[in-house]
Length: 68
Image: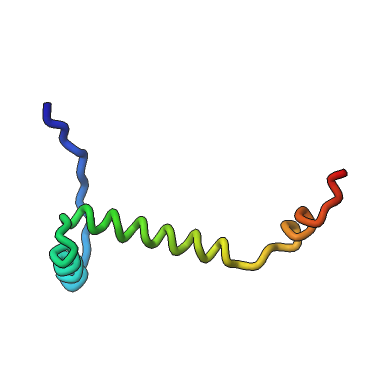
């Protein structure tokens, strides 16, 4: 049984499309797979930045709270 993935179109400029095709070719991936990896990497970077940011005053107070 073949399952078809739902798809949609995204408009990108010609230069970005060329960059995406080149990267996909170098990685031996489809355009969709390359986009998926790029999005995952962006999300990981964003999470990493959030985790490396300093704690807020409320977070610091919570960490130092006397729970006993």
